[in-house]
Amino acid sequence: MDLLRSRCVIAQAKITYGALQLAPTFRDGQVEITVNQIARLTRCDPSTARRALRSLVDAGWVEVRRSRRTGPFQLILSNPQLDAQKKAIAEINRRLEKAPYRGEALMREWLTLLIDLDNFEDDASPGFLVNPYTGEEMQIDRFYPPNAGFEFNGAQHYGPTALYPSEEQARRQLGRDLIKQAICLRRGIHLAVVHAEDLSLQGMLRRIPDCLPRRRLDGQELVIAHLESRSRDYQQRTPLPMPVPR
Image (cartoon, rainbow, N blue to C red; front, side):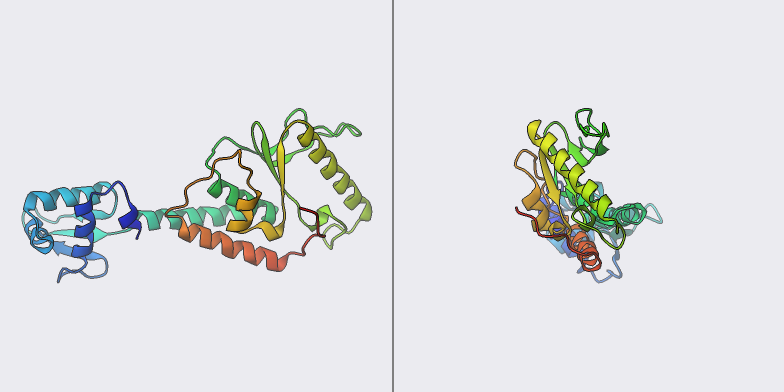
């Protein structure tokens, strides 16, 4: 399906890719074959077969290895979109393992996948975001200037937890959250508050405001499934916050 959706590979090349897997010498993703044999398999002339093969090579779907100047060459078939997704998943896992706060990190991974903007700042401290009572600079977990931000609120934002048992700390945290939301509202910034229950494809899509462009998700099925799995695992291990009005 990835190849069929690809716009950088000509139609004849897509036929050729399928035909190569039907060749008698095809084994374990590799095939020894000549251009004339490809032409016969796909019922086209050799120049068309050569052009189709070049299209596959240029797009990363086939690697050509040749041990001698004449005779058959070895073709190694691959799936660059699948390879790219596997690489993306490995990078996601590395970032998650290094992150001090798993829920916040998962939210950021979802936002990076879903929002078609690279202009953002994590742990942003815009100059206007200052607690008027303490003079403390406050942060937004992820800020898309000029008018959108995201905050991940775990259970500790709503009351004492095993990790943060102090009621006084919980009250201060809630106070900071309310002040932050009020300042953003006054500044015309849409501050979306994300909870553990929102960490899914549909949940995060609901939290993204219309002012931010959505990214096309074609060819991202494995990445989405992986983030869904990591998010479910986090949700099962994490206490839910108190219900809040939506």
